[in-house]
Length: 511
View 1 (cartoon, rainbow, N blue to C red):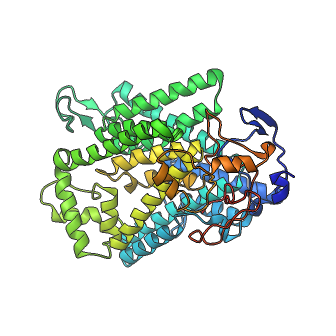
View 2: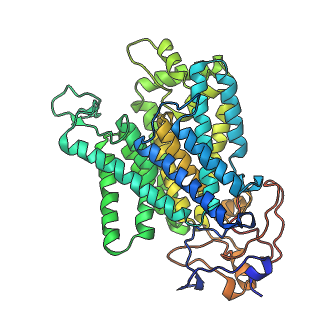
View 3: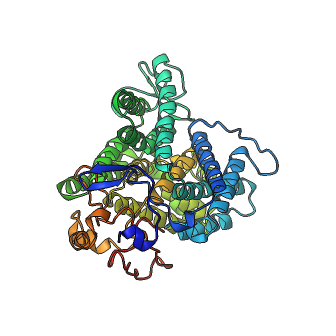
């Protein structure tokens, strides 16, 4: 009896392809089998497609701002209307609470509540809090659509490539025509801002408001665009795709964002490492990434911070005076009042410090928890062979480095793009459901495959086994593609053994 028959999963109707590991369904690594709660009637497919269309519209809103900004009535804007339609459609498709659970549920709830507490009673802050709800709602929409729609992996990569191409081509047109954007870099040591000096370099902004936002968007989306070319295009189409990726890298250079260019190098190193996070490549990549982060922090703090050092000091003083936060979007006004001079500030020029000022110390701890869980999920999914998780992790690492001295997520459009990427990452398939499951192996082996691979491979019949191929690992634990089993109800409780997989947890279910 095969694993699929023992567990009760209907056989796949996909065509069978032959790999180094033997025959298997022709399905991408990141397209997980649908769990039991996803079994649905034909009209559910229509609703799932509605959810996917809403995801596409929200992502394109982050790229080009295609939806009108004004409210239709009361507080309902076109973007929020699209989001509500998608969430309602997916709630009908997957009404069970377990279908919506992710690792970020608790810290996101804490962040929303602390931000509400800090913003309540202030009209301008409540507007920022409502946009925070929009970003959180979009995150959950991406998660549930990816879990229920079979082709989400391909659709997400196509969206990423399209978004990168649109922003890139607009930016390069500005560079070619020397269109005045209001932002320049003076050539010479330091590359200071200034359009009045001779030979000043025009900084492109693409479809965004300033060059730093364009750089942040490209850092976030470019790894997914690269994966779209590598994963789905062939022949001459792949050549065109590589041209688009190269042009996107050129557009990142023409933003003349010093943090963006450094983060691009770091993100490329992280992508190469996460695609095969084992052995010598892991050690070299880890040293390069950690060394780059440490060097960037030291450079920013010691010599490159400039006025930011004063901004960070004042931000800490404001945070100690207001431990519960000052409210969403109010950090810039308070910094303007506290720092003498003509400079005006929109935020604290550090993502985590800005959350500390606006959401208080509890909200700051929630943001730290979100950061840690996202990093852990990227690592675990990449080790299990998820290429889209590797691309998401590289993009988030790049924008995270840029966020050390800036706050690009202060822009709603960048925040929506981040919600899109984090949603893809947190819904990527995993062999282990527990956050703590792989920690001893990581600490003990540092890049070596877990020792459970050999006994599992010996116990699972060859016809149902999917060992990792040398070129593209499917799973570090060798979990079969069709082996699905219920997960524990408590993610922090000890894992229950799967009688079919003999000790392994359910495949591709996550929290």
